[in-house]
Image (cartoon, rainbow, N blue to C red; front, top):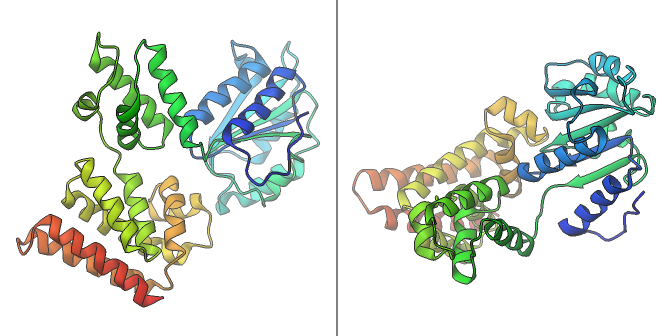
Amino acid sequence: MPSYSSKAEPSFLERQQEFNKVLESGAFTSFFMISGEQAYLRNQYRDKVLSALLGDAKDQMNLTKFTGTGFAAKDVIDIAETLPFFAERRVVLFENTGLWAREMTGEADKLADYFGTQPETTIFVFSEPTIDRKRRLYTRMGKPGKSLTVLACENVEDSTLRKWIQGRFRKAGKTIEGASLALFRQYAGDDMMNIASEADKLISFIGEKTAVDTADIKAICTPVIQDRIFDLIDAIAAGSNSDAIGIYLDMVKLETPPQVILVLLVRQYNRFLQMKDLQSLGNDEIASKTGIQAWQVRKARPALAKYRSTAQIERLLDLSVSADADYKSGKMSDKIALESLINALSLEVINGK
């Protein structure tokens, strides 16, 4: 089994190499945990694990998949106790389940009690966007590198993403370098699903051309606004007006209309109000109660934690709504309304600390 070093934060490439060693060794652990925000990587490594365990055909007779919340621990245990059908092992896959949410605590605890007692022929594989490593459901799987193999599909370094992007274009006989690569990164954001989609769209668009230029990107790619809104909100929450203005100017370079940013700021502070009194809950629980997507809850948490009270968020929302109204009534341009709002929001946060 691989030995996990005591380094505080291994790079994604290091995590990936450790994970691959287990798959290549054939000495499989009883549990595989693939988690994190990068759905592209989760899907890729889920398929790699299933192929390693069941063969490239992914033997459907010995694979059972559980998703969402519509299952009971007893269902899982009954399957896990069943011997594989003319094969070495049986695989139980949990994907995008509600096991980490409070409403499934009872079923999760029953599974935690069972973990470690299953037949040696049964292997559990998890592919989840968010998990809680303090929960019994996780700790009962054992130690990473012993009975558990883990891969966190998150915090992928920019240099790694750039090489991956260039490799994707290279496979299609295209190149993307320098200013074009930098602009594409700005447009496509950090989500690898979106990057892959935008890259494929760009490859198709340039046709017989071999080199991507910035005009191609501006012509066909859709800028990712949501990630930059979170960055803007984070800078405002930290009371850093200069950083907030810098992020706003970056969004202007990406030709993001100021009125769109205004609308998104109003929406985000509305979401903060919904989430403020639910911060003790997990991301999935907050998502189910508010209708906000779990990944948006996770992205919002750092900024939300900086606000002292619901009243402070209400003041920020009032400022945002007023700025939006000033633009819509023709009192001022969207550009002036937004720039004034960013200054006002930052000042409110600084004075409120």
